[in-house]
Length: 157
Image (cartoon, rainbow, N blue to C red; front, side, top):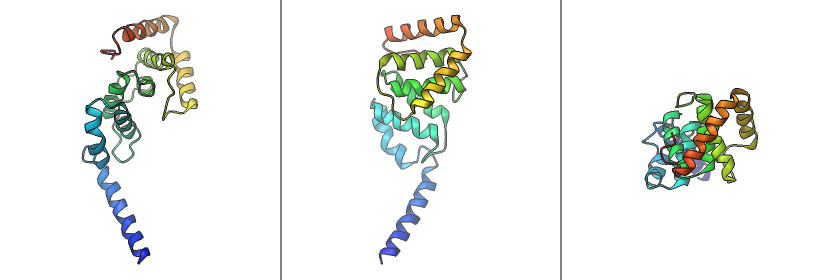
């Protein structure tokens, strides 16, 4: 009997996972989206990373950018780093190393603990940026970051 229950449970989970790949119809998205829309940073990060990684939904960088931007504009360093990574690699946005440096710099300056991204990923991103930017671009990114802070992260993108 227990084996039958376990088999049914695994079959249901598999069917749910396939159904979840549809995006907005995903139970995970349906759960987190109302909280994210109300400004809950944790829900925004959950949706952003879910779409970024394509886990439980189809990978969608445009949706990931949307949710990470909402959290980044509330000063969340994890979301800011994700935006930096996405601008660096042109994922869901036009590739822009200066904007990538701005977001990464804002996250670094906040001294917040960064979740989800590993220290190795952050180091690699910063090394890539350092190798790609001219001194003038570094200065432009720094000015953009200062302007962004002065505007309390509103309209930074």
